[in-house]
Amino acid sequence: MADQAEGVIVPFHLPVLLTEVLGQLGVRPGGVYVDGTVGDGGHALAFLRASAPLGSVCGIDLDPRSLVRTEQRLAPFGVQFTPILGSYAEMVSLVQGMLGSEARADGVLLDLGISSRQVDGSGFGFSFQQDEPLDMRFNPEADIPTAADIVNTWSREGLVAVLREYGEEPRAGAIASAIVRQRPISSTVQLASVVAGAAGRQSGTSRTHPATRTFQALRIAVNDELNTLTTGLQAAVDLLAPSGRLAVISYHSLEDRRVKTFLAREAAQCICPPRLPVCVCQHQPRVSLVNRRIIRPSAGEIAENPRSRSARMRVAQRLAE
Figure 1 (tube, helix red, strand yellow):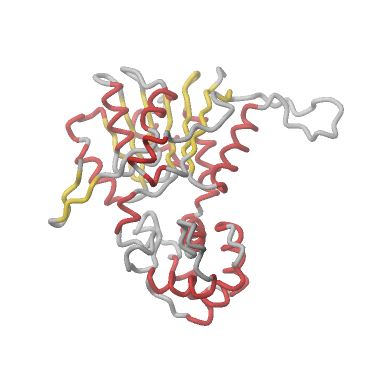
Figure 2 (cartoon, one colour; figure 1 turned 180 degrees about the vertical axis):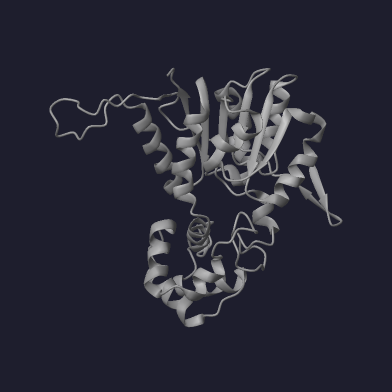
């Protein structure tokens, strides 16, 4: 399927791990489901079909343009689909504000990747595949610093810290120095060129452009993604009904470590320091881990959608209160 905008036909983003998500969440007729990162609505569409005719699906997204397209795509489902503009970190108040203060979810999905539409040309500067302004805000109307603000105003030391912490970039020092020397930098292609010149081209066996980690780091910094993730995971567990499930799809180690650590803590019987001889924390686990090992795309899915290759999914189930 595709969306036609401004005379150009743009394919909808392929939902990653779709069969696995439906199976792990146990989507059923009449259930209430929340897609916290609805994007083009691929997962939400499957939720709507599987939960029909009496199910309810809330789709949350920061990008108002994306939400309008998705609402149009899912219009045939009428009131079964509720589009919500906002951050998944605030899903409890957002969902209960639409469905009622007692509303709980039977399943919550967080797909943390950026969509193919954003990579292939959103105008927001998420990728160096198109020459776009250095913006990188998920919500283009948000009053927050853009990637251009960070690149052109932060100190070398600040840039080094961002590249190391959010991009795990081993050549952070050289890249930051090159950015400072070449400022002002206004476009994605210009930034990618500066980074490639400082970092050196990767070997011919690698599929990764030398600017990939830098772009990841800037996007995470602009949108405060990791703190949003931690808050959003807490909100998702709060919103789940007993026996409801949370599925989280991440695409790089920084995200996955946060998800793994959070779920392990929420599932633990005790969170006392190991040095204590007896438990004194009185911690009560709120979830159980559905899968001890991460779920990855099949070879067939990767062949059909190469961008899914780095996806990994973790699933937890809400315990009774």
